[in-house]
Image 1 (cartoon, helix red, strand yellow):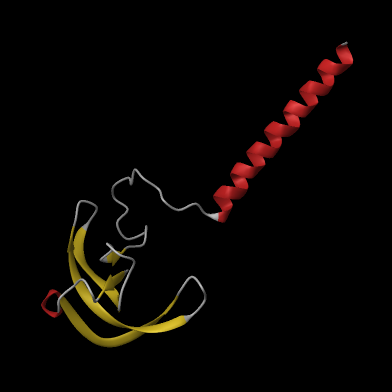
Image 2 (image 1 turned 90 degrees about the vertical axis):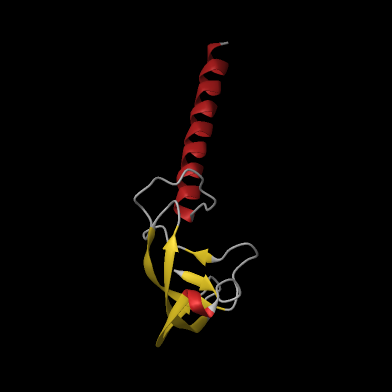
Length: 110
């Protein structure tokens, strides 16, 4: 879990006096301070150990992994994984091949 230092105030977090390394989507490794944050939301409420980053995208105060607050079903998914794309492509490819076979059978009937 990551929390943005540009959103939270010092009195809202507890500094743990430690750092951890995180790896971004580009592969860059960055050291971040560890802090405890008390989270109260519709998805989950608890005290979490978080990495403190300078900023997150505009409007985002906290970045939560899907394994931390998984008690309730999340209705909207905004991320598509490569495996999801591959599975969808396989369905489309299979459907296209089947349609092609059906057209060949129909052409032979005439």
